[in-house]
Image (cartoon, rainbow, N blue to C red; front, side, top):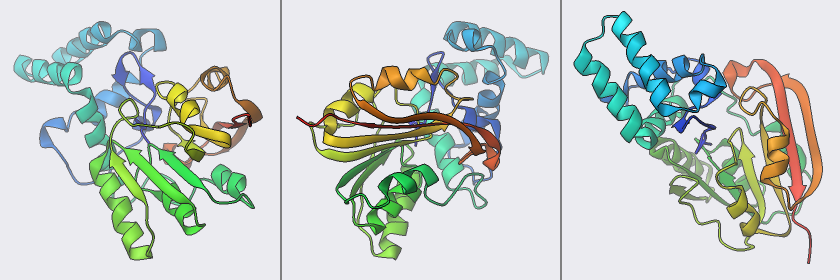
Length: 267
């Protein structure tokens, strides 16, 4: 989900627009408690500034100094942001996906549902799976499902739900940059509210001829919808639209949603 993974890479910092709404989960790693407010603040900066880690941290230090935060605490946070971003992100998404009152759609993604309707089940990969809502839906339909996400507690929750439902899914706790997509082994690869830029080339290699990429996100996260075309350029585009609708995230607000479906040419 991820996000990540479940994330949009801005600035060299792993920060997504979903940080715009509050978390309600229990604390995970206490030393990371500051990170949600940091993410929210970063999203208020101009995009050009978000791309420069040094500049972001310079402004962050100034902000905290004005708020009378102790210098040692300022440097502790800055060091964590610079050196442990993947861990900070995983902790953020663990809190988000395990919150008792979720601020996201817990039902399967509607675009995915429409794509797989009457489609023969095969092997599916859920990139940035979060707590598994889409992976479990596909498994119920008979798909052979694998999902991955760096948020270990979210992935554990997905496996717990699968067990209760009598379903089998394979999962990994890993970033998109480390996951092995393989060669021509997936009939469907899902990017549901997850940026694909870092893994698109590997996803294309892993897709079977005739297999499809299903992608959905918001223009708030991907301002240029044509980026998706660039990511998946070798594929045959079946749908590429921007429509106003209810977000799976952003506290379910109405947003402009990018929906993209593309097929790998058959040999």
